[in-house]
Length: 106
Image (cartoon, rainbow, N blue to C red; front, top):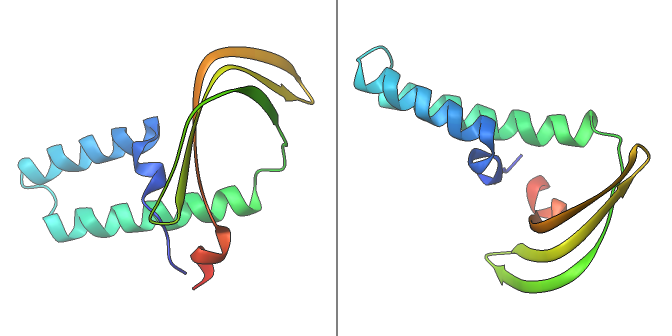
């Protein structure tokens, strides 16, 4: 299964990357092992989101910017309303990054 590095820019991904960098700098891990950990993180995040997340959210807002680069869509919405089963939330600005799931099975 191919994966994208989308989740490395999430809060948990950035914390993992920072900790791995510190461990490599301190000689606790080799750079090769740190890369393998990040690759496994990418795979695990993709699998967990496919199998564990059942919630659905609808989003409405003003489309400020959109971009397609390397089969990855990026949307920036302003004054976005997010609705789910739990309720509704209005957010000043939200960035959505999406890719075609068919690319992950190649």
